Image (cartoon, rainbow, N blue to C red; front, side):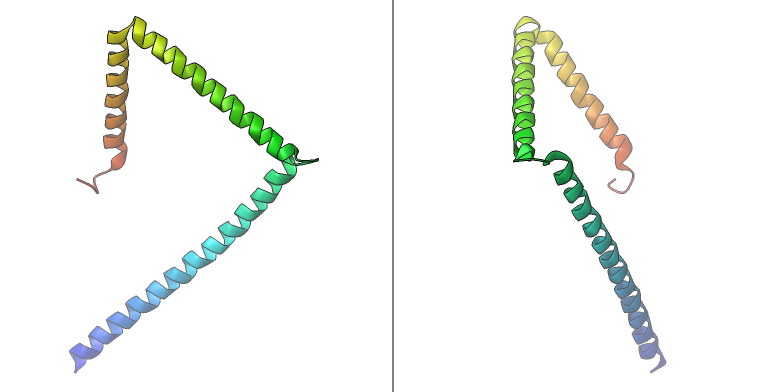
Length: 111
């Protein structure tokens, strides 16, 4: 009977710790939700002062990003046509660096 009681006490203790953690995470989420809502309001105030300026500014920013992406794409295509070997070396070096950083930052938990 004592062993069964020990198991029940252990389970009850784990349940209490889990419920405390859930309450803690819920409180944190509520705090962050309020913070995110306030940041959204500040963002709206900063960009949307008069008559739809917010949407106009977002549209202009999107157009600028699309133009920049198009420019970079065309520039890269020109480079690949002129220097295909150098481009392959750059891409291989970039991918290798990515995998090296991933391996170094990943930690030992996945090994």
